[in-house]
Length: 252
Ligand SMILES: Nc1ncnc2c1ncn2[C@@H]1O[C@H](COP(=O)(O)OP(=O)(O)OP(=O)(O)O)[C@@H](O)[C@H]1O
Ligand SMILES: O=c1ccn([C@@H]2O[C@H](COP(=O)(O)O)[C@@H](O)[C@H]2O)c(=O)[nH]1
Image 1 (cartoon, rainbow, N blue to C red):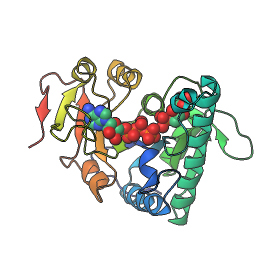
Image 2 (image 1 turned 90 degrees about the vertical axis):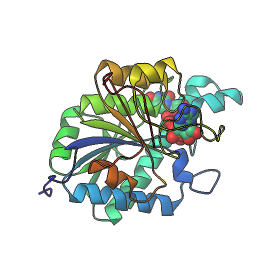
Image 3 (image 1 turned 180 degrees about the vertical axis):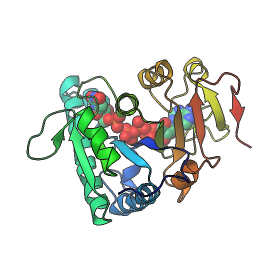
């Protein structure tokens, strides 16, 4: 039986991990140290009774847009990107199960014998019994991203929040990797994020979350303990929601 969730702000979360951040200090692939650390941090959440659904990106392996720019057919490139997310999901399942956390991988593209087909009702049952469920192969459709898949699955499984784990501390006034003077928001609304075209999430994902009133939190997955802090209500990263009364707030 899952443990009590009395210390968590959320009962059920959809955690989206950046594929690119899984590379660690390398230029391609998966750094096992990053995987193992994330597995430990996710295990802490499961331990306090949080139901964890996950989507993992594929940017450490393939992105359709980049393959297309290199001359590949775009749809083929997107299929390769979605298959990359299945590989990341398998690696994450392995890391979680080595930490004794029961984990299911479902795929939006049927892959009999490798992973389960995506099924919302089964996913919900697994989450209720305390298993981590990783939703792989994105939405199953080209021209989307795993941010959209995360918002879509989060809405479908009735998650309390979509938590985007990335390489930066939250949403900034500009890309902090390119502009060192950028300032971090602690809170902003979806409409403000859309209006300012802040690049941390794609617009389709933001619109989907806004229209279904699904709050999104963005935090730095390279900061040890940040995920647990966010879950117990700590002031971590950036909150994006429809709360106009709070509106645009900057971090101190
Ligand atoms: N206004 C902004 N605030 C924060 N980050 C931003 C902003 N604009 C662009 N970014 C960039 O967006 C990146 C977040 O994207 P990330 O790589 O986590 O997601 P992704 O591309 O969806 O994942 P994947 O690596 O799996 O493809 C950050 O590393 C940051 O450099
Ligand atoms: O629904 C989806 C999700 C993803 N893709 C393709 O996969 C790669 C990797 O995903 P990231 O979100 O960039 O990490 C993406 O670039 C797309 O090519 C997709 O086609 N449909």
